[in-house]
Length: 278
Image (cartoon, rainbow, N blue to C red):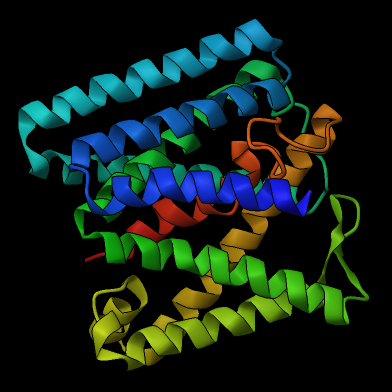
């Protein structure tokens, strides 16, 4: 399994890194749209749709993203910034989803309706894709600094949980997650935030920009909020999988599960993080 995970990760990096650093914004947007449509397919299946209906949802999502991309190309690069209200809408959707679902460790009846859940997935997937474009517009390094928040949190939570994990974070949702892992993630991201603000070469990262504009306390509060969002995004996807009765969102990524299993922490983090940009 470890060998399969490594091979899949290498293949993904070989595809994504050139797209991130060398391709135009339009090519990057298209590649990310293809990955996002796969995640939409997985979300629709977790919502309760059969395979062909889930494909329809994915194709509808891809068609919408492609149409928007054409409009942005016609309107110029500045037109992307005009779509930030979508990020605000996604933030409100995430606040509602997390507040209604995680404390009760279950989907409320009105959210468990497949069509309602799929529409919510459509919105949050679209907002995360748009946030990727906005972040990429600010440079590959800026985007990597956002992804790094989730990556640092995930790695620290894994090792912190394995080393010190006793008390379960949310046993009814994801028995493998522990409070020790959550504290380790929080500590690691706070260190990551301090490094971003302390090193001149990282002055263009989101956390460093927040420090420069609002000061260190605001940056640390932002880091706490973002790592909390990454953990809650992971928990929400686990809740969706429990609702669907599956272990992984799909088998699209050998050794890793599905696309959603890799990006679940980023779905709430990305659009809300981009709202911090001046």
